[in-house]
Image 1 (cartoon, one colour):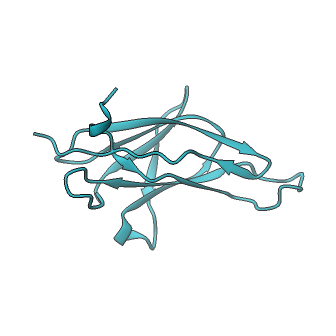
Image 2: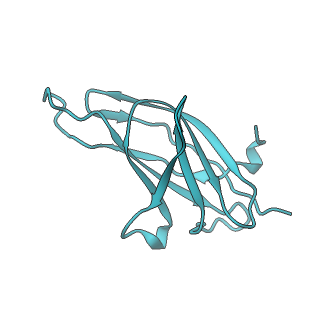
Length: 122
């Protein structure tokens, strides 16, 4: 586990893929959005490799978000409820990760906001 000063700022947001919680066909998945921030200067890191891994599963790549390249955000659609590890790495930086739980009630997604920092490697 990294000390708090070494963990990357991952701005996490999740949105339900269906807004109708009364529908029996409600799709209970979310889109996870992550930003990776440089801990030395608070600038976004646009060349990061970011993965989300559901407990017991394989790492799933988070892809650069179309239309948001200036903000260097990464997304993964179809995220199910569960315990995840989000990992980020980039050339010239120390790897970092965070564990989080994503809960889905009806079609309302509940995901914690998590702050981490990718620190330059020495």
